[in-house]
Length: 295
Length: 283
Image (cartoon, rainbow over all chains, first blue to last red; front, side):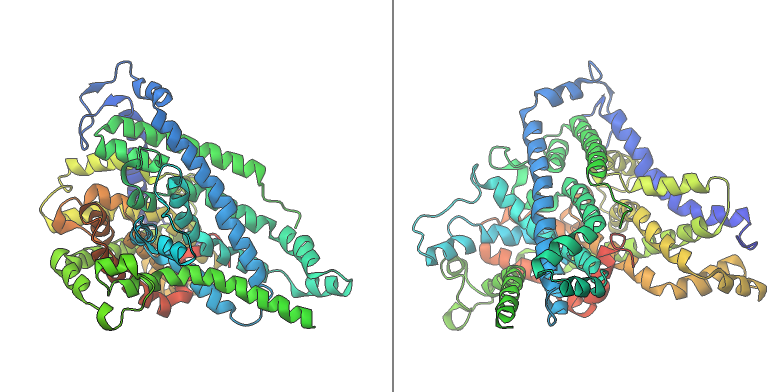
């Protein structure tokens, strides 16, 4: 490396501001949060007056709290929906777009568009769409001849109603990533396969998808971490886990315990659980969908 | 050949159907924002012309909600976050790539690992810390804004550093060396060569920081609790709980919040798409 960059003074000067932020706002609070999960914190903004008895009381509660199990189950469902729904639909759409000549730019623009809209605004919008008496969907079904109204937010349908907008919003994101990946595949490969008599479908399954493997792995990893972070849309559409605390995700339940139930130390415990879950899941994804060097 | 044309038609049909799902809901909310509540519930597909047309939802939105102030708050917060992230990440990325020092590897790992921290795991202690500095729940506008800006800067920082490190690595070193020979100091090299040449990368960072901050609800729920401090997403969230059955008002509020974003998106879509997918796709 060049001889210019040796003055230690500048290393410190350039790095210090960013690292002060990282330490003060990420590393330090991360550990304080673990500490907090053992304390008794009655109100947000304090470190609590004493330890819990026993100090791991909150962790015991995790096992007996039925709502945490509901929210874990919903979060896992959300991850599956993300992988199958978002990445799956995006894959189909990108393979289709790869086969057309005109309008590619239009579809890129239109598909990506929901991502820039705040999930809170989308939550309000979907509240209007799924309204019982009568939102867009029920009015549309009525036009089609359905006579009774469907309650999209009842216990039976709530989870599905919550996941559809989340999946829908991010399809465009994975679409762009996969479409870029497809564009990187050399056209000559397809041409020579066509000469050898491979059908369009065969070209998709024997060229496109295998060559997209690494990009698909990236998408799945992003999907899993993304699904753990979902908060805005579910909280706007189903505040406080309505109906009957059936729609909580780990993130929304953490918020509920901290801000609504004023159970701050339990909220901190759920946050620890979210971290553990995130580390575990990304380990699993990395082993199952390991990026390959073969291609 | 004929079969092929049918295939093409089918492809366009499927692609257009998905496009319809992304466009139509926004069109639908726009047209319904001009209708009275009962009409939304009965004739939501009809165009708001003639008797159906009304501006009362918008009138009410401006009377009941302080949308103007929420906009100012939102734009102020997001602009500060964007500038903060660009400056801090630019400097750090430059130092991490160009300089050689003992803890370099460790510092790099710290940046990468910081991306793994979910906001849920840090928010409670951050709130406590900022409370001890007396910048949360205060009537001082500047301080209250600062209490949101700081954690959002930190949240975007590590990702921005990684994106900008990629850019600095691609810069030819010769350029900086010759500038050095001409007598440029290191800060001059940074501000006169690295920053101007890296405009596209800085734009990428700016876009995702801005949009992420503008759309974020979680942090705002913690820090912006006083009515006059609310930013856009916080205001919308409040609306669901307070005026949950006033559907016309909801439609107009959603339109007012979405419309500026749509307009900006139409003009800057290329940069926005690139900015939001940065890091996921290389090149």
